[in-house]
Length: 218
Image (tube, rainbow, N blue to C red; front, top):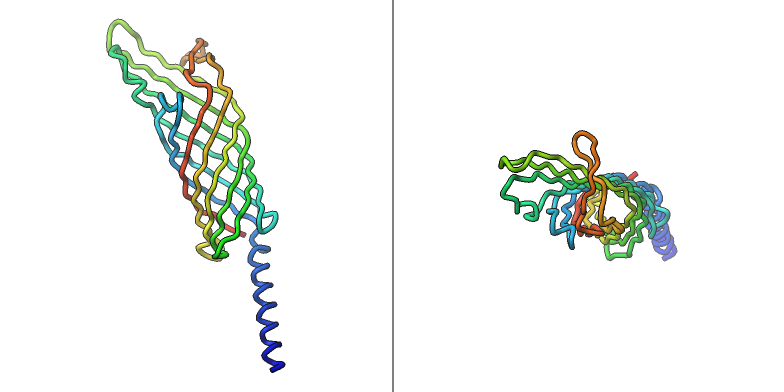
């Protein structure tokens, strides 16, 4: 009987140590993801959805909390807003780059490999809009305008990690990128560097996104 109790205690200790070691040894997560963003509001009236590419690094502070940073780049196209002219055609691109700091909270689940979480990111956004107009009528001429803005915004998200091996995790999350405080009028530059006033038509950018990715744990 004593041997059985001793064996049970040893099993429990080993299990506890393995569980602790599981989180202790893998404090760092590095990976990448790809998502699809869909613009909303006034910005969504002129921009179409497109892909987002993201590189992320996280450090686990404990079992529940992590902090990290991420770099991302979005490629958004033009909506039917730009199809109204009979004098020519538009080729319009919207690009958004970001460098954000992120904090995440992880919830308990029935499976230790399944890690649902909620997080909030905050930081720098770079907005770039290129408008290339090609005239098809003698009454107009070709032109190119570029608008850039530097902004601060945030991006809350919810998602989950699933550890598919000892060192790799699959990630899926739903996020909402919000970039406020765009002015009514900005400065646009042509291909020669000349400046022109330009009316944006929106005062904020709202981008829901669904993304998937993989993390390497070490």
